[in-house]
Length: 261
Image 1 (cartoon, rainbow, N blue to C red):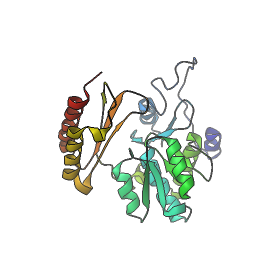
Image 2 (tube, one colour):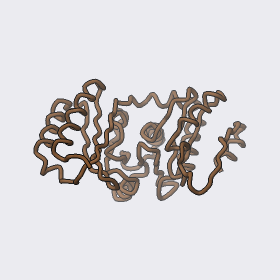
Image 3 (cartoon, rainbow, N blue to C red):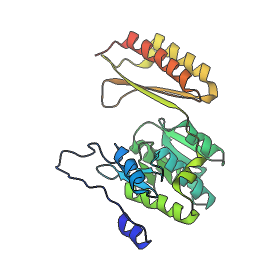
Image 4 (cartoon, rainbow, N blue to C red):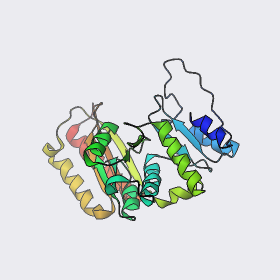
C-alpha cells in the first residue's frame, strides 16, 4: 500500500531485495537492523528510508543523510504536529520507561505531558485506552495511532510521517530538530537469581546515590528482563562520561550482590 501511495505522488520507490526462507525473519535487516536501509538512502541520495520489522508492527526511518530516526523522534514529530492541528487527545503522549528524556523535554516545551509505562507495546496501548490518548509508542519503532488502528502498525506509521512531510514541505532531518536526544547508556548483566531489588541494599544504595547526583537532569532505570535471566540497566543524562562512570558503579554493585550465571 505505501509504495503505491508514494508512486501516485510521483515519488520513486527503491525496495531492498529480500530472500525469506521462514527462518531469517529480522536477520540483519529491517527495523531491528536498519543499517542497510540507512546505507541505501545515502547510496541513492534518497529523501528518506523506511524499515519495517518481520511482522510490520514496527517502523524506523532514515533521513536524507542516512541518519537513523527512531520511535522517540517519530513520536516527537507526530505529537507536535497533531497538537498544532488540535488532533492530539488528552494533552499527552504515552511511551515506555525506556524512551529518551529528550522526548519528555520536547513535549514539555509545547505544554504536553509524557505518560510512561513498563516496557512493551501492550502496556502502551492499555494506558492509551484508559487515559483517552490517541498517540503512543516505543523507541524501538512501535508507534500507535489509535485513530487509525488498535496496535502498532509500521505501514500506518510510515504513512503518517509521509503525510506530515507533505503538509509541512520540510525534510525529515529538519523536523527531527524539535527533539534534542540525551545520551543513553544500556547494559544487560546475566544473573544467577532474580532477587527483588528492594532486598539488595548495596545495589539499591548505589542507585539512589546516582539518582541524587543526576537530579532532574537524568534518569536511572534498573529492571529485570521479562524473558531472560538478566538485569537491565539504563542511564540518561547530559554528560556521557559521567554516565559511563555511574554505569560502572551500578554494574559492579549488581554483580557483587547478584553474582553471575
